[in-house]
Image (cartoon, rainbow, N blue to C red; front, side, top):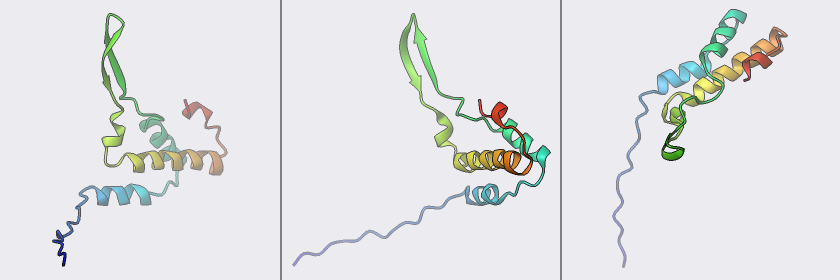
Length: 98
């Protein structure tokens, strides 16, 4: 007869959930607001760096955006702002995509 001891399952508490939900539910209804969002949130993660001395890489710092607990929501918000500008306002969004 084999008995197994089960550990009680621990529920992880997400302290950022209210902010994440707020960002997910944020409606973009204004061209000026959409432009501000697109200008404030970068198109790509700006933090990745390679530190080198005399042409030899000694340290590589990975993109730290994935460590940001609201990163996915910010990227989604920027995408929704771009879609608003393109679909609703008929604006050319190519200047915001580089």
